[in-house]
Amino acid sequence: MKEFFTLAEIDEVTQAVRSFTKYQPKIGLILGSGLGDLANSINQPDFVPYKELPYWPTSTVHGHAGQLVIGELEGQFVIAMQGRAHYYEGYSMAEVTLPVRVMQRLGVEVLIVTNAAGGINPEFVPGDVMFLSDHIAMIAMTGNNPLRGPNLDEFGPRFPDMSQSYDRKLLEIAKTVAKENNIKTFDGVYVSLSGPSFESPADLRFLLAVGADAVGMSTVPEVIIARHGGVRVLGISGISNKANLDGTTITTHEEVLEAGQVLVPKLTTIIRGFLASL
Ligand code: HPA
Image (cartoon, rainbow, N blue to C red):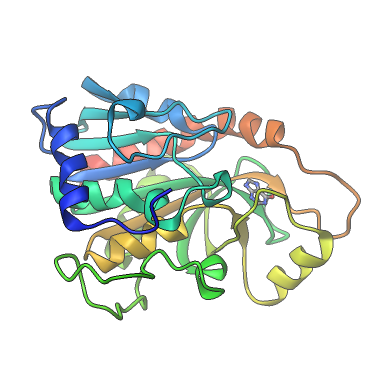
């Protein structure tokens, strides 16, 4: 496991990705659990299996394919991660976020990050779409910040601002597209925990009390790294299950993947429309 990467190592990976494709992607897309099928809409794709890349974390989780898909979608050149690595799999924060650093070196300016999340807000039901208006970086607050370690000044400052992690203009574009397509969406706060155990009912009541609308095990590390490098971010949660605040139901990975079936068409419509409007 590598705790930190140097710029030279990041560029070694960047060169390896370049050797697979002639495209110069400007938009990055991270596809969460059960949402990988979104990448199937990409035209004339080049594929880069994660295992062909040095240092690259490969996801061990069912529902994550493990390749980059680079090509054209709605007039934009995109690089999509079909599957992401998580901290709970045993990777360092630097490894989990290496793909975002590589995207930055490839020239990506906008990152669309998706995830499957548990709905804490009592209004949410499985299959709902929530745009991230902000996050609670619980995993980072308690010491596992992906920027811990030597600062890479080429990307950004030692103490980067996180006051507008989710770009308001991008959010407005995405909301307009959803509305035009009659897709109901919510705005909300995503809280990231390390996982892999799901939350206890008391954990969930705590998270509700501190202002979280949805909970998951990803996304925030990638967003912190993207913002450090000045990349604009659109964050979308697909609500896969209702948080079990009173302990009367159980949560399974299978239901998370099942909700992906309902969510993929909605997110595909939103993301395609968003790209077309950029
Ligand atoms: N908790 C944490 N992570 C999740 C959940 C959940 O309920 N659903 C999907 N990812």
